[in-house]
Length: 149
Image (cartoon, rainbow, N blue to C red; front, side):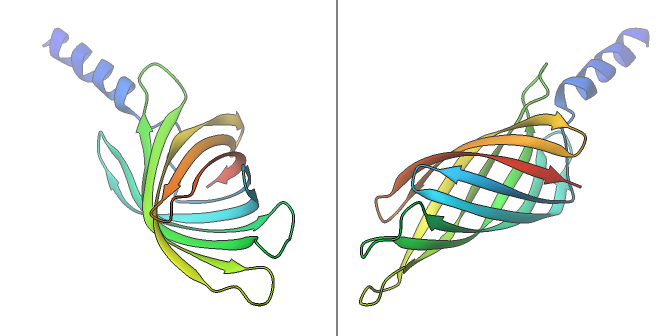
């Protein structure tokens, strides 16, 4: 019996999310610009993570005739615990709309996927780093700060 309790306790410790959140919001700096993101948890999945929705908006570093703003929304799987660390992983898939910053361009829709890591800084604040690719051939990465509640 004691051995079973020890195994269950160790399993719970290794699979507990680093910082599960009900809602989160943050700011990001990416290879193409800067932006904000906000999300909400929908369904916690024991021993795996949390399914939620997330939206983001980004502006390019410099506005030119060829630059685009990015609006995105997707479904995310967060709080994927990395054992023995205070870091967890996330993955998001969804759709993005790129809107030209100058007259004459056209809006473009694409599917995207994003994955990354999150970790604690202080209290509800944490860092996040991610990579992203879209069906439009865009590849990028970014870092940011996030508040989790």
